[in-house]
Length: 179
Image (cartoon, rainbow, N blue to C red; front, side):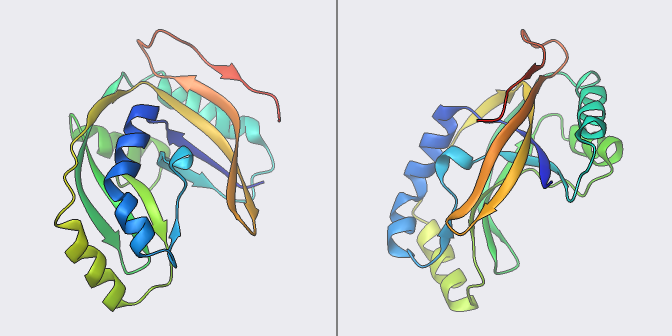
């Protein structure tokens, strides 16, 4: 089973973020754009997991030590030439180090917007187009969701396994059945 843990972002954030890049999605339709409903901040990816309880236990232990996290959009950027993303800033920044250490992951706060094996010319064109994008948003993260990632020809499909709220959040964890 392919599983990952992620901070959820609000629907308002998803809509505002998508609206800010919508012209790019139309102009570069050959790129594999992430659907706005799938926007999230990946904490850790677990490939070929047999025992989901170990993942749940790790995320519950982690969430019990972390309070709500302020996050702010920083800029649009790329990982190599293959991933276009929204870079985020966590406050305080030391939370990034805590995530890396406690979850043993190479965490970079971001939201993936597009994936592709596109070349440098398209990257440069997108970078040029991004200069005109006016986007600003911040919010508070208060939960982590464990998802199953199901690969399909039409793209990845995510199924919620469990939603776990951070310490001092108004909610606790809840488990969703398969749909």
